[in-house]
View 1 (cartoon, one colour):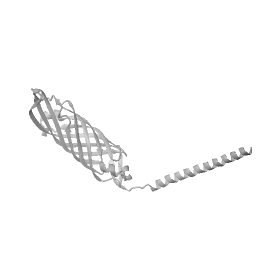
View 2 (cartoon, rainbow, N blue to C red):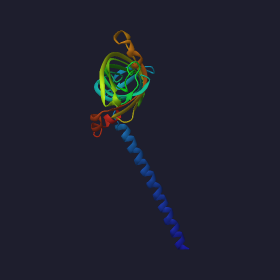
View 3 (spheres, helix red, strand yellow):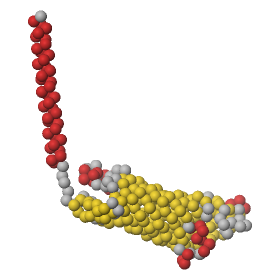
View 4 (tube, helix red, strand yellow):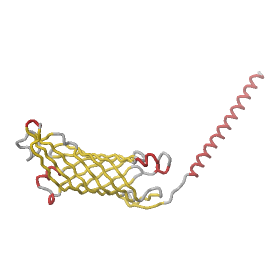
Length: 250
């Protein structure tokens, strides 16, 4: 009987000790969290931009000017055929929401033989190649923590190259190059996947300027398209390993 009482007393004592230990541990964890919140650094506002959702203020961690690069692919239609363009952009970002610079795109279909209206008569097939370059301007109209919506446009010049083949394509018969001027208007959304990588997709339309382009080219250049691009900052990728500020800035 006395052994049972002693065992019950010991169990109660251990229960009380465990209770107080758990309370103490919880209090310490709470103090640590409060200390972290108190130590979290705040940053002064640096500049404010206007968007469709109202003004957005960025703190001093955001650069007012920086150089940007990105790779871009476009799926479009060319002379009633599917076509893929691949290229990239090199430009600057001003106050976080305005981007401008130089872009270049090349048609990924030069090795594909196809029928081309007004260029294929009398030949086995025609090899088509196209590229264009120019300047672009973009403006973010909606900015959220990791996503944004932008409107943009571009203007540039391009060339179409036609190689006409006879005798089953062993040798091409002649080569023709035509120059055109084109403009684009587009809308795209951006997802900031990480602090150093962005994913962008959108829709747009490209058309040839009639006063600077042969009339026969307008039906080939004018086309809607969808695009997808990946932007990667190698500097931010490595610098973010050592800097929490870089990892938090989008």
